[in-house]
Amino acid sequence: MTAWNAVAYLLALALALGGVLLVSRPAGGHGTVSSAAIVSVRDARGGELPVRAYARIAALDLVSDELVGHLVEPARICAVSAWTQGPEAWRHAGLPRIEGLNDLEGLIRLRPDLVLVSTFGGEVDRIQRLRDAGIAVFDLGPAGGMRELTRNLRIVAQLIGAAERGERLAAQLERRMAAVAARVPPTSPRLRALVLTPVVDVVYGGTTGSSFHDIVVSAGLADAAEGRYREPWPRIGAEDALAIDPDLVVTRGGAREALARLPGFARLRALRDGRVIELPVELFDSPGLSMLDAAELLHAKAYP
Image 1: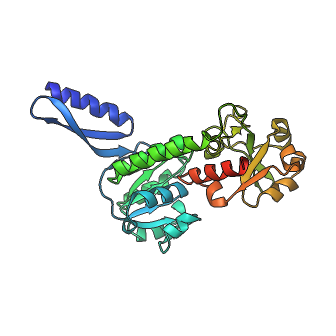
Image 2: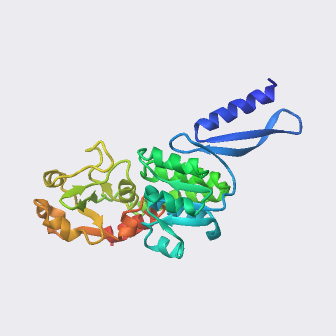
Image 3: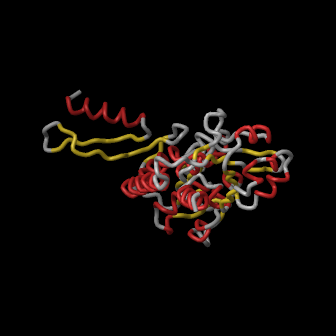
């Protein structure tokens, strides 16, 4: 093995472990690496996909809907998820809507050459059916917060041949999210906010590792649930909420009354004082690029 081949091999191996595989070329015959071309990427489950200009991309979840909408030309998108709402619904108007991996036959009939989907790992058989049909599938893994979003943004951009665009978008998102939080002076106390989402008779929160946490912190608020729960989306009972005693409650649009009707929650100081901020469903529910809009709106409402 030549010296340059050894360097190229080690570089490729190191970057492969980070989700991308590279092929490098020497320049001028001097044994130095002058450029590197990404030839494949790995998804959250370890599946390897070749980098190319996919022409028929199907997005099957809210995050993927937003990513393709900002990374590729509309003509390259053949379907989006059935749950697309708000501005993304207008962006993708006229495209077929697919209910995730629940409608495999309908998806296969559309003949996509790439499917983007975010799963928790329990849909292996359905993903394999698509691959058996000759369709490339990229699994983004479970939706989380900013860390997962920007990582997937960069990798998906590499996958579809838009690496520079993806890097610019990710860097801009990180910069603007930080700028919202910076509007609160370092010497000013930050209001403590608790995310509460009623689902029938159960209330779920959102803390470290979730998009809710990143929205709250980026809005210049303190996550009142931080450090209290192991899971990103914990169940929160009325007694727990009363013990946390947040300054603000953050929830999805239209959920304030449902929350107040549940036993014990009406006693929360934030509810009694009318300190409940409802965010539009399309912003509150999306762990995608809409987190920026959610953080900006939450900041404006919390610090009028």
